[in-house]
Amino acid sequence: MSVKLEGMPTNIATADSFTGKKVIDREGIQYGKVKHIHIHQDTLTVSGVTIHQGFNKDYFLSEDYIDKFSEETLLLSRPPVRTGVPVVDIDGHKIGKVKRLHRNPDTNELESIEVTDGLMHSKILSKSEIWGIGEKVILRMSKEEFKKIE
Image (cartoon, rainbow, N blue to C red):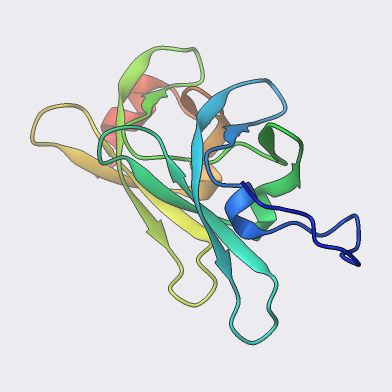
C-alpha cells in the first residue's frame, strides 16, 4: 500500500497502488487485473499496462486503451482484442477463436488477427474485418464468407 507523503500533490499516486485493480470496459466486462504499469523511459508517462487474466494469460494494453483509474478499477476507453476469445460471424454463429494478434512493431497497433476453427486451420483477417469487440469478436461477414477466405 502506498503512503501519501507530506507536500505530495493530491492527484499523484505511486505505480504500485494500481497493481491488482480490476480492469473493466464501459459495458462492465472484466478483463483481469493490473499486473504491471509500463513507463516510457524518455517522457516518464504511462505507456501501457500488463493485464493478468489467469493462469499464463498476461497481455499488454497500450495507453490508448486506458480511460482512467478509479479507487478500485482501471476503466478502459474501448475493449481490447485478446487471444483465446470466441469469434462469431455478423449473425452470431460461432466461427472459432482468436489464435494470435498481429501488431505493427513500431506503433504496437493491431493490424490483423489469426482465427482458428479449432482444427488445424487458421485464417488471418485484417482489423477492418472486425465489426465489434467485447466478450466475443464479431466479424463483418457471414460464416459462409469466412469459409471462402484463403
